[in-house]
Image 1: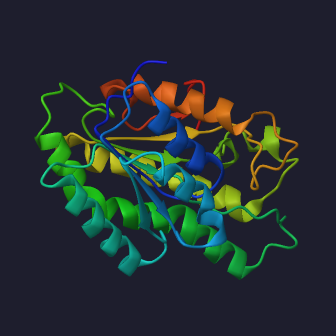
Image 2: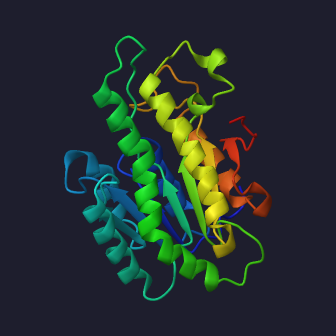
Length: 256
């Protein structure tokens, strides 16, 4: 796998599953980032134990309290990150935090739709807005040509279940609120790619595959290790041509 090359990375939803494995593999890379910021809602809670273990071994890991649905939390997290960066910018923001609920058209509720949208769409929107100044600073201070994760990037962890074109192939799992929220996240990603391109910030979406996590269940096709190795391999190769792209963990383009 090629080196990612990002000096600083923030991962949301980093206390478990794909988020925790992203942090773990970033830290164990031959050329790890100078700073890895792991955002999670309850760093001191039971689900934060995995991150605490990593902190004890890696001085370049900073665990940040960050509930992606809380504007106050996001603002405080940005101040913490900026303090550690000491004038340099944030190279890579990975919006990974998300929720999934298995509901069909007959059982999905207003609350299901609102909570799914709040976490899976509004969360990445708010986090990206607040961290935008640090991403811009990284882009402005980089000598990199074009767009890349080494320069400045927002990567939204999406899902093939949000692909409108592929619904008929995957509808065995209706997950209506999740599908709708991920379709909206894909639209947000495209808007971000157009809105932030002139700032030198790459924006794109990645489908991690069907992964053996609490969200994906143990019936899934991929281990967390396989998915994250694939994702990081894809991110290391991103360039200007990937602005606004929607790809899977292998780098294959997916239809919107």
